[in-house]
Image (cartoon, rainbow, N blue to C red):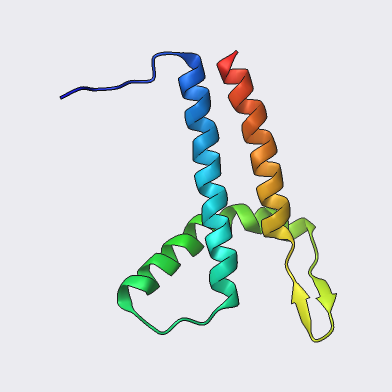
Amino acid sequence: MTLYLAITRSDIGSYVYTLALVYVVLIFIRILLSWFRLPYNRWLNAFLEFVTEVTDPYLNLWRRFLPLVRLGPGALDLSPMVGSIVLIFVAGIVANIISG
């Protein structure tokens, strides 16, 4: 059994950036699942609740500052898009600072 550890600072920086990318993928899944109504399934519902509970705290920060964009009878929530862009930008800066 071989155990791999983050030995260098660049490894830790890449882990931080990868973690941010995983979070952006969760936000993207949240966006896609908000467009479709899926039939009830216990496992799918557990997954949907997990994605909602993980992404809501971060997206609620942006929803306080960004109003909904009215498009006819509906509205467009820009918080996932702005939140993802800011998250990738800040994660890249933090990863570069960690890497040295």
